[in-house]
Image 1 (cartoon, rainbow, N blue to C red):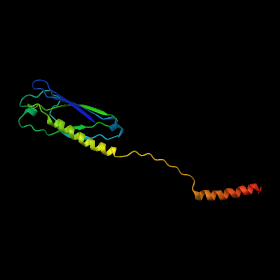
Image 2: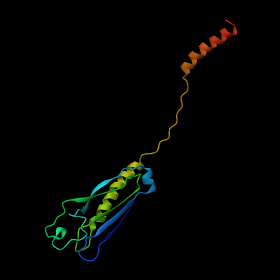
Image 3: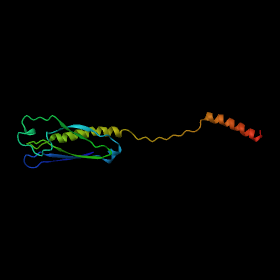
Image 4: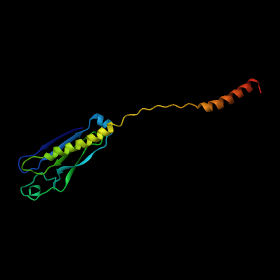
Length: 154
């Protein structure tokens, strides 16, 4: 699995936008590994459609504490990739360490599932059954008797 992300913010009171892409490797798709969902530590903001946040409002208010967090997930194996955009809270520092931490946790959980799926060895089994010896003996005796009677024209 490959995870790439990018954070872009315009100069000024604009909120940054996180865009990310999660792509599964071909072997992961072939393993039919289920999707993994994770409640990240990336905070949800009120009114995420607003591209700006003025000083003292919303997440820039001194008393603001996040109450909800974004869900991130590994794509369904048949899809193979997932991209998403998340509006991030404005931060004076411009630092968002929870993004890498959340993606790292998602990757670690997914890798456990991949390891478990990979441990399920392939199976190729063949079989064949013929008529049993006991049944052959019963039939052979009957067939022999019939042949002998036919030979004697009885």
